[in-house]
Image (cartoon, rainbow, N blue to C red; front, side, top):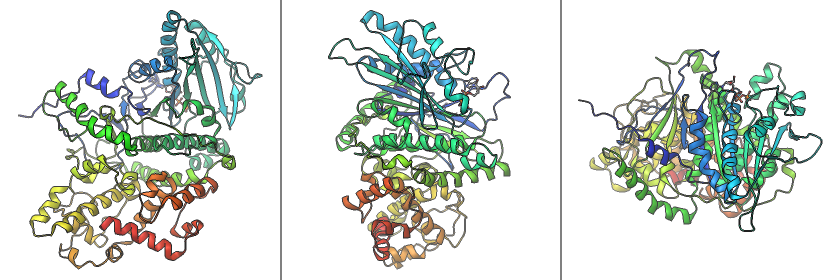
Length: 626
Ligand SMILES: Nc1ncnc2c1ncn2[C@@H]1O[C@H](COP(=O)(O)OP(=O)(O)OP(=O)(O)O)[C@@H](O)[C@H]1O
C-alpha cells in the first residue's frame, strides 16, 4: 500500500512563508480573467512533501524561490502572509518595498492595485494602516508616481515635484489610487498619454510621533511588463521604450543582488526607479519581490522567473560570516521545530522543496521546444545585454552606500521552488549530500552561480556512486576528485546553456567515467562511458580538461565569463587567480564599460596578457580537479 504523502499544515506553511529575511522573492501564477479560456496547464506548483523527498525530477530549468502562490490563491492570502508582517516594521520605523514584476499581462497591476472584484495588496495595506494609526496617534499620507522612459511624473499633481496627500479613509485612498485600469477615476495620466508602458509607484508615508520612532514608508511598485526587445522590435513597436523598461528591470535586480551579496557598491544610480527607491532598498528595509507569472506559456515569464531565481539564489548563497554562524546553529532548530509539528519523519538534512513545473500532457510540441530553445538563447543573450545596456548614467559618480542587509538565515523560509520543464513527471531523487555540505560553507563560486537545476542530475551522481568507485579500489584522493569533478560538471550541465547539450558519445568520455553512472538516463548520462582506469592516466588538470569535448570547454569558458560579468566581489575573489585588486578592476570595468566579457580575449581589458588569461583558466580548471 502506498504511504500517503504528508501534506504541509497551514500553520507550518504560514511559518515558512513568513518573511524572515530582508529580501524575499516569491512568485504568483496569475488567475484567469472572466473571458479567458481554461488554463493551458503549462505550469503548476508541486507542493513540498514533508516526508523528505520531492515529487519531480529531470528538471531542465529549475529555479528556487522562497514561495509560489498558485492561481487560486488571491491577494488576501499574499497580503496576510507576505505584506502584513512587514507592516509592524513600518510602524517601528523601517521602510518596506513591495515590487511586482513580470512579463506583460502577468497580473502585476491586479496584485498591487487589484480590481473592482478583488482589492490589491496596496489597498489591503492601506486599510490595515488606517485601522491602526488612529489609536496610536499617527497618520498616513500617500504619493502616487509613474516612471516613464526614465522620467518621473507625479500622478497626483503633475505640476508639482512631490505631492503627498493625507488619507483618512479607504474611499479617499481609492480616489487617489484606483483599482486596476479604471480610467474613470481621476488619477492623472500625464505620462500614459504619450507612452503605454511605465512603472507605477505608490508611497504610503507613516507619520512620526516621537524622535525614537522615525517616520517611515511602504512602497508599492507595479513595474512595467518585461518584453523581449528583439521580438517586439520586429513587430515595429517602440524599441526604445521596451529597452528602457527592461534596462530598469535589470537595474533593480542588480541592486537587489548587490544588497543580497552585501556588496560595498550598490548600483542605485543606474535607473530612476532605483534612485527613487534608494532609501527603501537596503539598510534595514524589507523588500518583497513578487514575480508575476502568466497562466499560459510565456517566454518572457520564463526569463523573469530566471531573474527572480538569481535574486533568490543570491540571498541564499552569500551569507556573511556572522550570519553563517547563526545559520549553522539555527538550521537544526528550525528543522526540528518542523519535525515536531509534522507527522512522519523529516530529514534534517533536507529542505522541503516546492516545484513549479511546466507541464505538457505528453511531450512538448515542436513549437514549444523551439520556443524554449529560443528562451534559453534569449536568457543568455539578455544576461549579456544586461551589462551592455548599462545606463549612460553609469558615468555618474555612484554613491556607495554600505548596505547592511541582515541575512537572517532561517531555513524555515527557504522553500525551494523550481520551474520544471520536464516532459514527464518522475520521482525526484534524494538531495545530493555533497550539495548539502557545500551549502553550509563557502561553495565554489562557479557552482553557486549555476545552481538553478542542481537537483536534476544530483539524483544520479551522488556520494554513493562515488563510494561505489571507492569500494572498487579507487583510491580515496581520487574519489574526492570524482566528487568535486562531478559537482562542477553537474552544475555546468544543468545551466540552461547546457540544456541543449548533445548526447554525443565522444564528447565526455571522462566525465561519465568519473561520475560512475551506470544506467544512462539523462543526456549527460547518455554520454559514452570509458574505463575508470583513465582517471589514473590523466596528468595535469589542464591535460584532462583538454581531452574533453569542445562543447564542455566552451561551456566552462562561458560560465566563467558569466561569473565575471555578474558575480559579486566575494564570488570573483573565490576564483583562483583573482584577488582583491583584480576583483576590484573587474567591478570597475563592469561599471564603466557597457560591454560584457564575451570571450577570453576580452579579459585583456583588465590588462591581462594572453598568457595570464590562460594561466587563470588553468588555475580554475585545476581547482575543479583538485
Ligand atoms: N488573479 C486574477 N484573477 C483574474 N483575472 C486576473 C487576475 N490577475 C490578472 N487578471 C487579469 O489579467 C489581465 C492582465 O492583468 P494585469 O493588468 O494585472 O497584468 P499586468 O502584468 O499588470 O499587465 P501589464 O504588463 O500590461 O501592465 C487583466 O485583464 C486582469 O484583469
